[in-house]
Image (cartoon, rainbow, N blue to C red; front, side):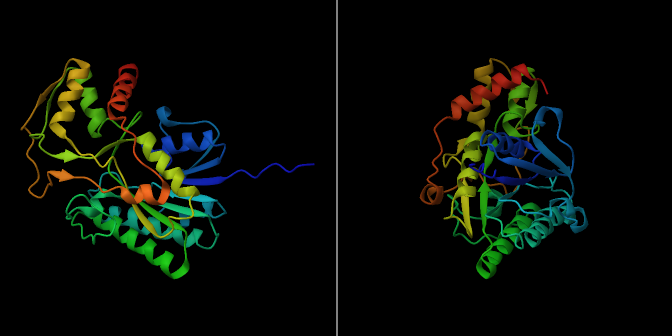
Length: 305
C-alpha cells in the first residue's frame, strides 16, 4: 500500500489581515494545511474554510502555547497597524518576532518568512537596495529594522532558516478602505469631495497576487536563507496621476489637490531596486497595474464594505 504524501503545514501570523487572507487562499490552493494566529477572529469578508483560526498575541510568550509545535513554514505578517504607540510598535514588531524565533528555532522548521517594510529605508537614496545601511527615525521603521538585524544574527550564529521581505505599496481585493487605492476608489464611486496632497510624490504600487507569488517562491527556495529581498514593481507612479487615472476610469470623484500638507521629511520619490528578487527566486513583476486597478474597481462596485 502506497503511503499518502504528508501535507505541508504552514503557520501564518496575522492570517486575518489583507495579506494573510491572500496568502491563505494560495496555500489552500496548494493543498497545504493552514493555521492562522491573529489578535482577532477574521472579519466575515476574509474568513475562509478549512483554516484553523487561533487568537493570540505574539508579543506575550504566555499566549503562544497553542503554536508550540512543528510547522514546515512560518510566515510573520503580524503587525500593530496604528504605529501611534512606540511601546506597542516595539512589542509587536520586535518582541513578537523574537518570541516566534525562540519557539521555532528549536523545531527545525524549513523556512521562516518575516515581512519587513520599505520604511526601513526611510532615509536612504533611491532606488533602495538591500545592501544599504538603514537608520529610520519613525517608530515603525525602527522596530522593523531591529527585527531584521535580530533575524540576520540568528541566521549567522545558528543557521536559522529566515528570509526578510521588504514590501512597498501592496494593493488588491479586500484591502481595508483606509489604504490608498481602496480609499481613492471608494471616494470616486461615492462621488465624494476628498482632500489630497499636491500629488507630486511618487510611490511604488504592486498587486497583492504578485506579492503572494514571491512569498511562495521564498518559502520553497533554499537560496534565500539569511537574505533581505525587496518586493515591489520597481516603477514608481505619481500620486496625482494615480488619483486622476482612477477618477477617469470611474467617471466621477472630486479630488482636491493641495489640501493636505506634506510632512517636512516626506520623500517625493520612494521605490526599490528589485534585481535581487529576480536573481534569487526568479521573480519579476508582471506589467499588470492597469488590469489590477480595473479589477479592484469592479470588486468595490459590487462589494460596498
